[in-house]
View 1 (cartoon, one colour):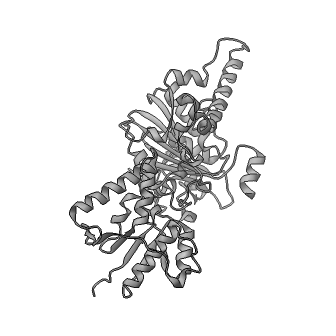
View 2: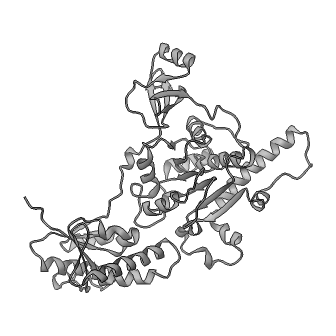
Length: 451
């Protein structure tokens, strides 16, 4: 039985989200209203990811134009057709619902026009804007979200599991310091907590080695102080073991506000850059787009422009440096002695580099410890762009809270961080931990719980 063709009308946000979306509908017909082209044209001068995607859309369509008429439709390698058509106003039957001729309504009107012209072919309006999908449904159009990359957030990989064992098994594990996995599927670098019963919250923590299908005690973190701090709970202990392991090249830390994900990532980075010299420097970055304007609109030097976005990083760094220096002063019996290194000193000597994500694209970063904070605000496409910056010997740490997303059209199931956790969980050089317990303060824990 021959597959029935479908027609997909694309909204602007779909292409801005992923310029290659126009090629993602196999052998079906893709229609792009001229209004979408006009909106894309307004974005092309931006220097951020949205501007780069807008320029890429133009290049894709221009290449297609060289192969045929976009007005009539150009065949793709997958057997589908991409067509650009004039935008249409909403029909008379829907004019009482969609009163104004906004760009969204013109795109909906175009989809209605295509549907009326092709009554025997299913027409679907594809948009990442929930309001557009609602309005399309109100006028009798089928509408869908663009969800090529989406996971079930309720089943997001946690990075560890609890296994119930008897006393003999625990004794055998402690004596041999390993146990062959006979417990079922365990992912590479997944942590295991051996417990005697379900109520046991202080079991023996171990880590799975995919290479020889065995479970071993923690090797890289055994409660020692890491740049002035120690793990306060089991999840932080697991996270430190991944962060301190040079064989794990990508670590993702997911947790709500106050769970310590950024602080422990910074502590592990400073330890391995400043004290162990495992990496040449630590690069810390976070998205700046959620606050609206690119850093070029702010006055001052690069450092001064970065201050509004990097202040949470500065706060964490000051906690680490002040706590560590105070302990060293007390140990040496001095109150006012030799000046201890400050954050500015580490920045000036090149141990630490703070970069907006705007400037990371196109770089090659070998032998470095890279932290991408607030990475839940990245699209999967942006996440790919950043991780591919990693050169030989580089470790990438992703931190974020999928519950706090500031970017339109992203949610807890489609953001780059959640996708990365699921995509990389079976890879031997990757590890993940979800941190649940808040450690910032009792008040912060209450806020995270009730809001």
